[in-house]
Each structure stands twice: as structure tokens, then as C-alpha cells.
Length: 119
Length: 109
Image (tube, rainbow over all chains, first blue to last red; front, side):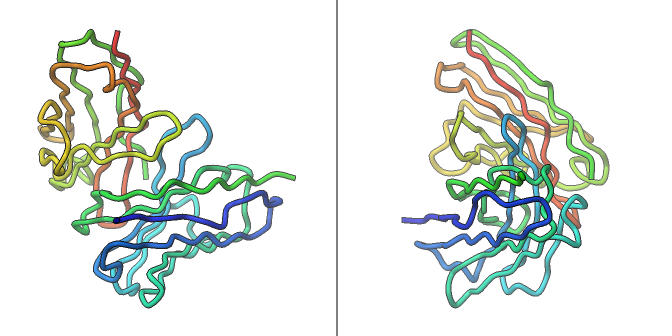
């Protein structure tokens, strides 16, 4: 079965750090671009970051640039999002998603992991 | 990185057709044929319904169709059914990012 499973969410204080993981299975992970998308409670989808198939190219939303780092380990079939200097406005469900055509069409999504930034 | 513009809500009766618009700029929607549409039910992950403006993934009903004119893309749902009630989001590729629309809540009356 093709699936993505996120982990690593939780409660963190403002200014703190968290690393999210996204474990892929059922497909050749190393062939696909991957993305992180977040959704604040009751709000819409917001793109966070993307990484190409071999990890050599990354992009970030302006709101997280310089604070978040996307990476991947193709040997472990895992995508990561290192989040530093967290703010209250980063509170959201974080989804990882597979980009099946490398043009931002996300055909497989994880179930999401909740990140809450609060003191 | 401004969000694409969608109507906040649309509604229709079972069997009717509705259209959701998604307006961007020449840097996103108008510049690429890489517009996607997602359906999201409460508490669930989004589901891809349309990609590359008008293509349907395997398993998506042919009641869902997409189109684009200039800087505006559209999602049309024909033969509305109760299970179509959900939030719908458009997205567009750009060279440096992905842009999502603000989302449209579809109510089936």
C-alpha cells in the first residue's frame, strides 16, 4: 500500500525546535519530489516547503524561510522538516505530500501531525 | 507569495452543477498549466481531484472537471451529490513555490 506517515508533532514553547518525520512506503521514494503543507486550526492549506527527488534543491515559503529546513534520506525512505525558532503562528497540522509529476500535483498525503506552539 | 483567490462558499442542490473559481496572476495560474484541485472533508487529509488544469486521477468521478482561462482556473462539479459537500482548494505551481487558494466550502442543500 502506498502511504505516508508523519510523526514528531507535539507541544513546544515559542522559540523552541521540533523535527517532523514522514515515512514513505509502497513506492520508490527516491523518484519523487516531496512537500510539506500545513493547516492552522479552522484555516486553509498553506504550502511550507518542497525538495526535489535527490535532495539537491529546496524551496520555502517566505513565512518559514531561515527557520525551517527540509531534507530527506532516500536510503531510509524518510522526509524531514526541522523547525527552529517556532512561533505561535506555526501552530498547525503538518502534512507531507508526494508530488507525482514534479509540478506540484500532490497525489498522496499523510494523515498529518499536529504542532502546537504555546507557553 | 499571495494566496490564490477563491470564493469562500458556494452551494447547490443535488443533481445541479456548480463552478468554483480560482484567480491568480500571470506568475502562477496564468503562467503554467499546473493547476490542481483538492477536496477535503472535515478531519481528513486533502484528496487530489484535478491536476494539470483538467486531468483527473484514476478513481476520481468524471463529474469533476477543470479548466483555465487566462489567470483564472475553474473546477466544475456536475450532478451534485451529498458526499461532494467538503472544502475545495486550488493550487498552482510557480518556479519558487506552490500557491494554494484560500479554500471554498461547498454546501449541498
